[in-house]
Length: 112
Length: 114
Image 1 (cartoon, one colour):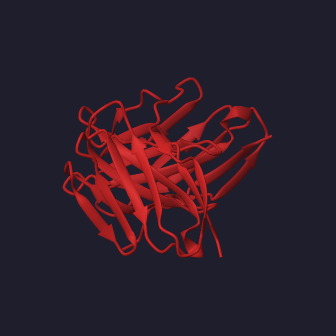
Image 2 (image 1 turned 90 degrees about the horizontal axis):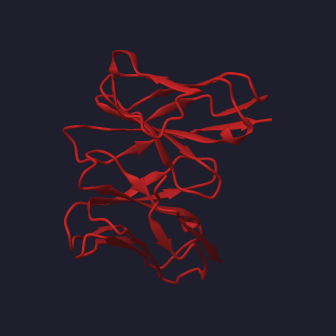
Image 3 (image 1 turned 60 degrees about the vertical axis):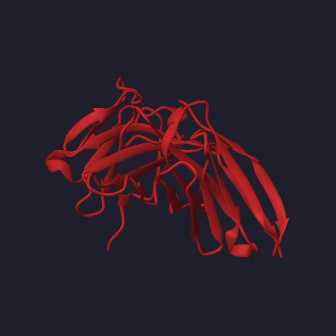
């Protein structure tokens, strides 16, 4: 099935550093969701974006809906060990009401 | 508010055996999704229900997979017979028509086929 491209695939960072990741598509999307998944658990919704250019924060997390509507970005500031996990983006195509396509995931590892 | 509930959490079966997964969505959520997540990948949609109607099952391998959502609440996903390649995590999610299109996931069922 179709999956969105996420970058980077994985990253090691030091505790306290900021993290940036992105998700890109060849299609236009009208909604972007960002999830975090811990081992053995289901994805947990972090942030939802509904308009091009929208910037939304949730604590230390900030996500943006790209102007072209083909990409989205997630930033984590001052990372802590519990930020470890896999981050997934999910986009809702214009033609697929309530249907989401997921990214390949960015695996984050934080070094204390 | 209770989240999406799934059972069992883990299941180990031999190939060719049947298996079933159960999902109870968030109360009031009209739309229910079943996803399969292979190791190291993002979830991939198998089937989507709006109330009791399956509106998107294009990715469901219909020769061995079936699903139902009687009364538009709980749902069951079945595999019969299971194959080695079916080993994966099966995730259920739900969302609300009148809400904001946000999907909420259950903890998943990890299936191992030996």
